Image (cartoon, rainbow, N blue to C red):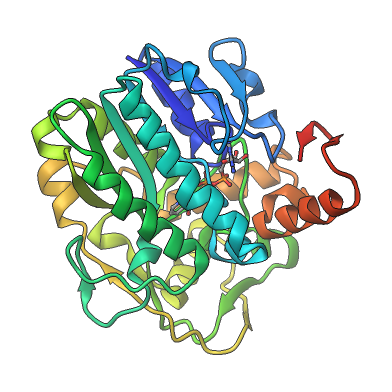
Length: 338
Ligand SMILES: NC(=O)c1ccc[n+]([C@@H]2O[C@H](COP(=O)([O-])OP(=O)(O)OC[C@H]3O[C@@H](n4cnc5c(N)ncnc54)[C@H](O)[C@@H]3O)[C@@H](O)[C@H]2O)c1
C-alpha cells in the first residue's frame, strides 16, 4: 500500500514508518521537521520525504496514496498551551484539512492519532463511548478534530480515530517528557526516579512499537470493522498507578528504588478500558513497561541516546523555536525551518 504518514519524523511516526517499510509498504513522510531529521536519516533513501506543513502543503502529494496516518501535531498538553491559537490551527484545523483533502483526492483510509487525554479526568473506567472532558487546548483540539473527521466516513473513505495511551520506549526522535522515559532519565542522571505527588494517580501506557502496530492493524482490518470507529489504544493491564510504575521501572533496571517527589498532589487520575481494540482488532501489546524502561536505560548507558539533547523535552524545544521565531522570521536554524 502507498501510505502517507504526517509527523513521520516524530517519536511515534519514525518508528511507524520503519515498521511500514519492513512490511513492504511504500512510505511518504510529510513533516515540518521541527526536531530535525536525524530520526529518519537511516531510512531517508527508502521513503519519500515531503518537508512541509499540514496547514498548507500542496494537496497533489495525496494523488495515488491509499492510506493516510495523521500524526503531525504539537504533541502534548504543555506544548499546546505555549500558543493556543497555533495549537488549534495545527492540531484541529490542520488535521481536518488533511482528512478532507485525503477524501477529495481518493485516499481510501485515514487514521487520526488522538489521545486518551480527551477524557480528561473522571472516576469511571473510560470507554470509547464515555463522555469527553477535554481540559487543555491540546485535548480540546483533539476532541474537535475527532468530531469533524469521523462524519467524513463513508463507503469509499474509511476514517478511524485511535486514542493512544501515554507512550514509552526508545525512538530515533527521543522524548524524555513522557512518564516512563522521564523516570528512566531521572534514574540515569541522579540515581533517583522523579515521581509526581502523590503517586496514587492512574494512567494508561503503551509502548511505541505497540501503538505503531495499532495503526497498521487498522489498515489491515476489513473496512466495516473500523470505519467511523474510535479505539482506545493500550491494554487493561497497563493502567498503572504512578508510584507502582516507578517501582516497576526501578526493578527493571535492577537498581535500588530511590526516588524523589516533585509537583503538588496531582488530582488527575484516570483508567481506560481497552476491551474494544482487543476484541475487534485482536490487538495485544507485546511490550510491558519494564522491558521498555530497560531498553531506554540501556540505550543511555551505551551512549546511544544523549541525555542532554534539548529536543527531547518537547515543550522546551517548541518554546525555544517560538522565541527564535519572534526574533528572526523564516530562517533555517540547525536544519529546522520555522
Ligand atoms: N507520545 C505520546 O505519548 C502520545 C500519546 C497520545 C497521543 N499522541 C499523539 O500522537 C501523535 C504523534 O506523537 P509523537 O509523540 O510522535 O509526537 P512528536 O512531537 O514526536 O511528533 C510530531 C511530529 O509532527 C511534526 N509536526 C508538528 N506540527 C506540524 C505541522 N504543522 N505540519 C507538519 N508536521 C508537523 C513534528 O515536526 C514532529 O516530527 C501526535 O498527534 C500526538 O498528539 C502521542
